[in-house]
Image 1 (cartoon, rainbow, N blue to C red):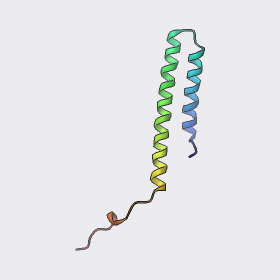
Image 2 (cartoon, helix red, strand yellow):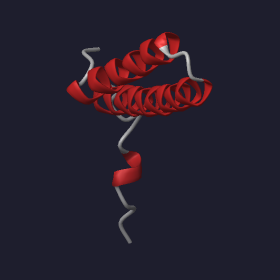
Image 3 (tube, one colour):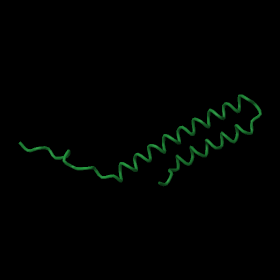
Amino acid sequence: MRMSANLDFYLAQAEKCRTEADASILTQVRDRNLRAAAAWQAMADKLARAETARAERTTIPPANDTAKKLPEH
């Protein structure tokens, strides 16, 4: 599955925040960047799950279409 531009962006932002956290000597700045990285990663994970679910819904045909047919009276 190809990653969307949004997913790429979220992952890049998470990595950027982790890098900035590693480079920071100030505890508050490091913590802020780690929180931001966790938030970006959570958004990326959620989007990846949604994209996977969407792809599965569009590639798997319904098991049967009897649910679409109503009995005639």
